[in-house]
Image 1 (tube, rainbow, N blue to C red):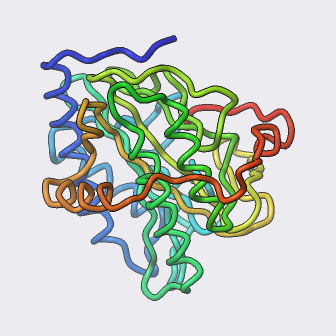
Image 2 (image 1 turned 90 degrees about the horizontal axis):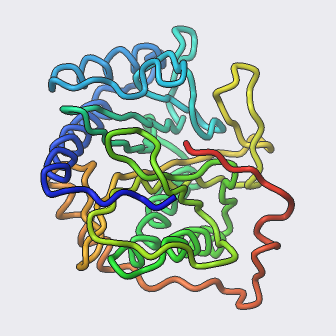
Length: 289
């Protein structure tokens, strides 16, 4: 099913939702410190979202019990906030949250370090973000959806990381999850042609070790199969003829991200004979994150 092309009015509402979400992420990150529980983080996030007149889009979505997914260290996504889950110096924490503003959604994720973190952890966070921007070189009207996927996956693999395949990005608008699904690794074909006015949530999830994950008994939280660290970076973007417009950021961040995006080279895999089935390494059933 093809992604919906948004009207000018819808795009303005999604811009507004995204600006708010960018501020929420910035303010939330500034509040987090060692010794805080992940439930404290969720409480702050919900208060911030509601202070802007928005609805937390994650809260009670398909039964999820919180306003933000707080995933610590080896938790890939969908970490459920708990009062006895305490973040400490040296942890990395992925914050995935969304807002609904006047009926329209925005979705974004950031991974932050708590206090002083290891170089290995800092490099993972940075390369996860840069894998997103590798994909952005292909996110323009007339391009192909899975060229974004290939660029993300090849960038991460070229730097020695595992690219999560069980979870994917998605279209977004009135609903959190709309067509199309957006994998973070190469596909057999190049996928649908991108059109101006499409809105997408692109979100690489990158592990230091294996790409494989396992699911905790709560049915929500995915963790790395080998216990290695994982990072997550996501933005809601608008497809235009000139390239992507980053919706889920503050005005200041948008200027910075445009500079980062412009500096990224076109990414090719170092191994030119890489086959799609070598990426798949088995029958993987992905689901939207």
